[in-house]
Length: 315
Image 1 (cartoon, rainbow, N blue to C red):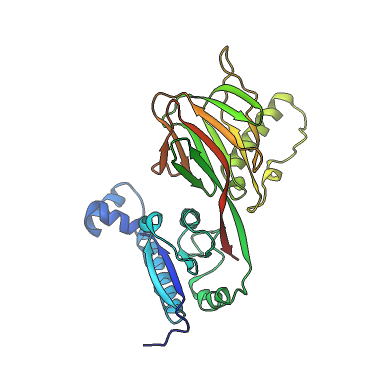
Image 2: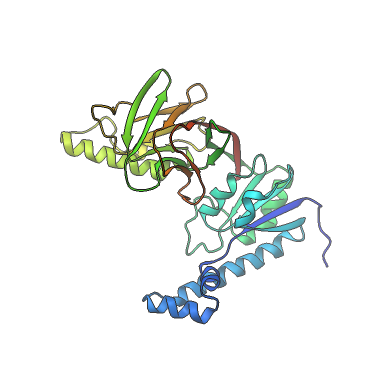
């Protein structure tokens, strides 16, 4: 057995492939294949993805084990795992796995590894498994550049909280209108809408971009003239920006509801406060993961702010 270079701990975050998920669901690979092919899909694509992921996993382990103490961590155990202050975190998977892991790390450097560059573009995955033998020692020596990522935080008046890497959604679980009172600075109003999206700098190229594209398109079509904002691409902002933006989806003005506070900035001096007026099915979830949510029903107040916690992505 090779001697380890250091006793530093490396946490390798991994996830099950689509094929593994299917086998869990259908018990055997044969039954999984029958289901996929019956639906007209290419089962070989699942097999190839699984093979490449496990090849990358084997390579990652071979590169990491001589460098320090490696602890493998499955995705489902990340929320309950306690990361040590000196740990180096390596995430092998898609962008979503990197973003999900960021919620639970603090000052630890995080390295995103693309297991299949031909399949995944990987904005948060600048490295391959074979790069780890070079990258990790440089991280140990603090010689690698690290990009700071600011997160969003929702804190309820009952003490519960939720962190978002890309965005937070505040609204109704179903496709009906959400009712709430919204306050930003000294301004306050009653609203009815399809919900509120709060975006971070990292999320500004995702859901936020979609919202702005739709708003820009509607205004252009309505006015038939060039807007001051010529391109919604210009609305993205940096990952380490110390502020967030909120946008209200489909606000509905009526005798009892207004639609003035539908877009704005949230920063350290000006959080966003929302009081739920939904008797049931009110939720706050982050990063599109609807299963990880806070209940947000009548009387609960949420304060949305820039999280004190920051993520540190190795680049």
